[in-house]
Structure formats: structure tokens, C-alpha cells
Image 1 (cartoon, rainbow, N blue to C red):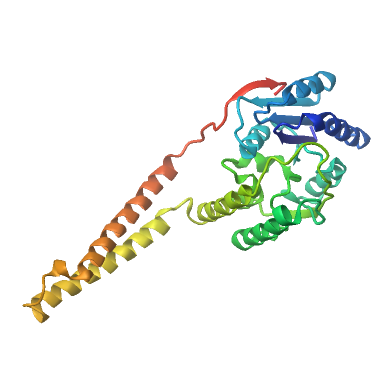
Image 2: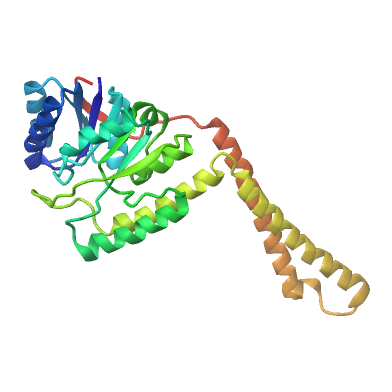
Length: 315
């Protein structure tokens, strides 16, 4: 199979038939062998019934239904596990991503040897205040932190070599950073392509301003994991040793001062340096233990399922 198209969705029943027909026309006109994997992330509007109807009419349509809403990252992870195509395309179900981009994305992976191709919505049809400006700030911070020179980390239209999506695990809200996860896994050929962006035709967006707050928090997380995820002792252990020696240094100073310099002065426990020393040594010990426990967890970590599937179609 040449192409798997993975589409996570939540309450997008109105757009599914039109999106399916559009993708099918593009696939047939380019003579691609393909599958469309819809992941219903706990919809309540009849989206699953539409997916079932599409699957009956087109054997290339497959579906996964979650018992409840788990989030886009978990939906993508389930879709990635089911995808069989040499090239995996992700796109949103709201018709804002253009299926006409798929053939060129496929070529960028198969013919030019890229591992990941990320879409760039250079011209957007979103609110300037609530989406465009926050998105620019978010992408700037992501570029600075990750080292990837991508303009639009949050674009849903992306293409991946199958090996990439089988080698990474997308959890939490990390769907924005799949290129970063791919880079950390050793896939270095990551590029971007300017793609067409269209105004939403049906319904309303499922994301609010909180996604940018969560995005920045996730960015800090992925930076930490990429730097110290394999060896947390390098951070916590170093900080712990530093804090412990600061406290130990104050303790030595207090002891020398009391024994040889200020013998008849106030008690050591009456001096602020005593509490600085005590606090620093306790913090140092705790940080060191945190690093030690982190090392144990990293070495014993096993993959776990983060979602519950209630139904499947041909997957």
C-alpha cells in the first residue's frame, strides 16, 4: 500500500462525506493504492455512523472509535499503529486541509528521501487575535527550543515515512511536536512544504486559547525529555550535588566560626546561615534521589495503552 491517510476527528459529521469524496478523487486520479483511517475521538454527533456508511461504500475506509474523548495525540497514535502505507499522511477532518496536496507530499517522502514533511499554512484564514498571533509566538518558541526550522508546528497536514510513525509514541498533547519526536528518534531528514489553508466550512473549532498554554508547557516537557529524558541524573544529580555542597560549605563555615572565631557568640541555631545550610543540604539530597529514581524509572519503563477502543472497522 502506498498511502495511509490518518484523520483524527471529534464531532465532524457534516464534513466527513465531502472530505472522503475529495480524498477518493485525488487518490483515483493519481492511481494510488490507499487507505483512509478515521479515528473517532469520542464524538457525540453521529460521526461514527457516517464512518460506518463510508466503510460499507468504500473498502479503503477504516475506522477506530474511542469510548470517550482522549485527545488528538492518542487518536493519532492509534491511527499510526493501524497505518499500513509506505507513506502516512495526517490531516484534520474540518476541510481546512487540502487533499490536493497529498501527491506532492508523497513525492517528497518517496522520491526525495525525506523522513518527515510538515505543512506550512503560510496564508491562514483564522482569527488574527486568537490564532494567528499566538501561533506565531508559539512557533518561534518551538523553533528556538527544538532546533527545527519549521514555520508551522501545529499544522495538521503532514507526511511521514512509515518507519517514523512506527518508531515514536505520541502521548499527552505531543501531536504538535511529532517532527521533534522524530528528530530525537534519529530521523534527520525533516523539511516543510507550503500548503493551502481553507476557512472552516462546517461547525466550530474544538480548540481554544488554552491549547497555546498547554503547547508551551508541552514544549518545556519535550525540551527536558530530549535533553535529560534518557539520563535524568545528569540534571537532578548535578543540581543535587551543587545544592548539597553549598549547604555543606555553610555548615563548615558555621563550625569554624563557632569553634575558633566567635566562641562566645550566639548559638548556631540562632543564625540564618544555619537554616540556609540545612535547607540546601535537604534540597540537594532530595534532588539527587529524584535523579536516582528517574534513572530507575527510565530503565524499567514499558509501553502502556493510553486509550480504550470500543469498536473497529477493518483494522
